[in-house]
Length: 481
Ligand SMILES: Cc1cc2nc3c(=O)[nH]c(=O)nc-3n(C[C@H](O)[C@H](O)[C@H](O)COP(=O)(O)OP(=O)(O)OC[C@H]3O[C@@H](n4cnc5c(N)ncnc54)[C@H](O)[C@@H]3O)c2cc1C
Image 1 (tube, rainbow, N blue to C red):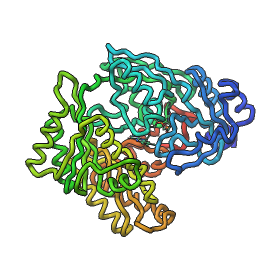
Image 2: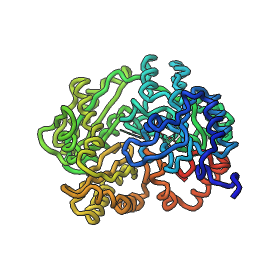
Image 3: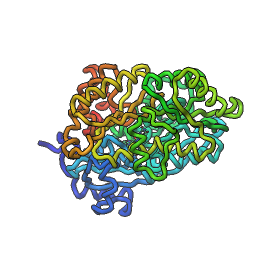
Image 4: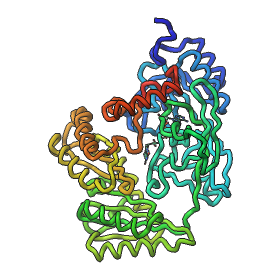
């Protein structure tokens, strides 16, 4: 077969091609030593372990552009990588060792913070935490927040259209994106770094690149929206007897606080018990073991009034109507952090309880209680004794429907049933017209599922977009589509 017809990544790049790549970034930033490559080849959950021909670390948009032009010319498969915190394997090369990893971590300049337009212009390799800090230094807030924020990067956040804990009030990464700079598959640079809220001049190219998981272009910089920093924040931890009550509490909170309701997170008893057992210095804020807990956060600016008063009013009404059994309102910043820690440690604590089959799904908020009940019945039928640990961003309809292995079960045998369990859970998601990937994306993990849940028309449109923007298939081949 002529080389030009081979699928990128199916054959190793020639030594001459690798040398040309290395010359673009200089020898110190073209890594071929296996030890130095290691951090780029394994992901956080230890599910995917890849190999690569080279890891490239460009420092400028010009270098990224030259790398893509060469990849296009030589049909070399490129795997873009940010902070390597993705949970679906999109940033990890395949096991063949024929792909080149393109790490954006050295493109890490904050180009501008504009407190008048309320925007920040950050390069792809800026960590989310560094972008938040730059906004804060200008007395503004970047309202995107996830537990991986110390490591994940703006480029990765946009490529995955990240969600997190601020979506309820501020939307996901896409909703915060005003402009983008993108290096295309053939090396050309699209400068779409506009700061405009309103711009109806044709197709929104920005929205095509956001959420494209490195399959359509390399995001090198972005203009993101900032908001005012809240002057007061209240965090409450409530215990509830049923999911129906959680639904009522959410409706009450939203009705009462409106856009000031910045988080409404669901925590199940079993998950809280895991955190109390395995987390450092964690304690239950409530006296009794309620089956469900909700973490409620209300944020207000000076002009909007006091967050504590707003939270107290919600809790009083919820007590009065018998919706909550107990609740505590944090009386200090450190207590608020303790409450958040109980939520943030759920995934980590679950690891200590053996194997866990994970799902990141969404359904309409009104359907959450029925979805959880039906999915749990399906899981129990399939694996008696399996322990659903169902938590997440209730206010976004986004549930992390994780299933821990039965007590005393063999971990490997349980994890071998991953596909079977997922199929049962996803079948219930689809009954409710939900999504099998609410915020983590598709990557490698859910690629085959996509073909089963998207209509032929939708898949055809997606493939045409891919063909138009990446005609030689050099960008993250085998991921997403
Ligand atoms: C503890 C923990 C908590 C998490 N919590 C959340 C959460 O609440 N919400 C949520 O949405 N996610 C969450 N995640 C998942 C992950 O943090 C996000 O998907 C994040 O946005 C990935 O950013 P990254 O820089 O690590 O990207 P990577 O993992 O490096 O890459 C992710 C994908 O984006 C592509 N990519 C990376 N950079 C670029 C670029 N510059 N241009 C084009 N493509 C690129 C990669 O090829 C890959 O397909 C969590 C992960 C962990 C480990």
